[in-house]
Image 1 (spheres, each protein chain N blue to C red):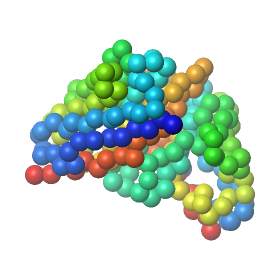
Image 2: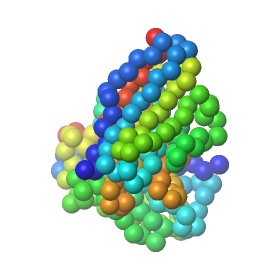
Image 3: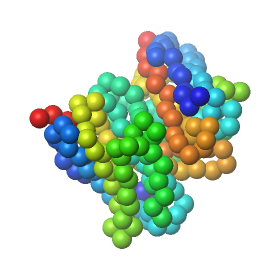
Image 4: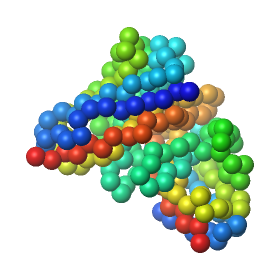
Length: 122
Length: 108
């Protein structure tokens, strides 16, 4: 059974960098069959895709965040990470990591981590 | 367009049928997937591809697609189906992901 678990600080000061890590168990990031994603949800709002990374380190980011976001992968630890710079209160959200599955003309997220709330405040 | 549009809220009487729609240009090229989210919980996948359900998702939940519109249908809605439902797909480039704004389903 594949499981994902987010970890990282729950409080970040404005203008600083948010850093989170997702640890994958039950599957190997190195097997190359999936992309690995970060998704966030501000309190009371909808889901927003942040970006994803392949096992080899190829990345795609949400165009609205691309200037501030970086996703990296550490296959030796079976982890992938998110860095979001110059954060403001608008970046306060529950951050989820998820596995991106795909086949012909379809992609879907599953499983998901439980999510971690990151608050941006001084 | 890289956006997906959903109605904000719908209601359904217990045991009746409700259909949620998701519209966007990218749906002409890609199937939508659908997620159910209950308060305080992470989303769970309920429909992917043409009309596939992960293990454990009841068969009263189904998906369909026509043109630029994807639909999620709950046939015989139960109290436990009350939740927010989100659609998503790749965007028209195929490299990015877009989500709909979500539909809150209330079971009366």
